[in-house]
Length: 98
Image (tube, rainbow, N blue to C red):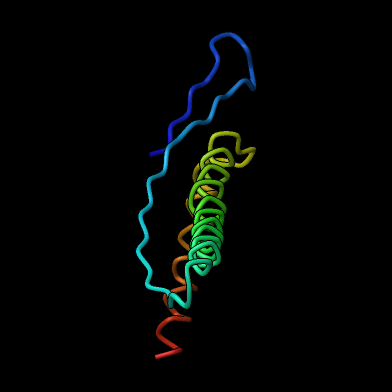
C-alpha cells in the first residue's frame, strides 16, 4: 500500500509513505547445527534483494510516474498522445516477436 500526503499552503511539500508485507519459505540443506546461521543469512539476503528490487520497480517507479504526471509542463493531450504511441509500438513489437 502506497499513499501520498501533500502539504497545505506549502508548495512542493509531499510526504510519501507505504507498507509492504512479504513472506518466503525455503528449504536448505542442514549439514550441522552451525549451518542454520548460513542458511538464515542466505534467506535474509535473498529477501532483502527481492524487497529492494520491488521497491525500485514498483513503488519508486510508480511514484515517479505519478509525480511526472502531476508536475508535467506538457499538456494532457500531448501526454495522452505519447502514451498512445508507446502502447501502439509495444503492441507491434509484441506481435512481431510472436
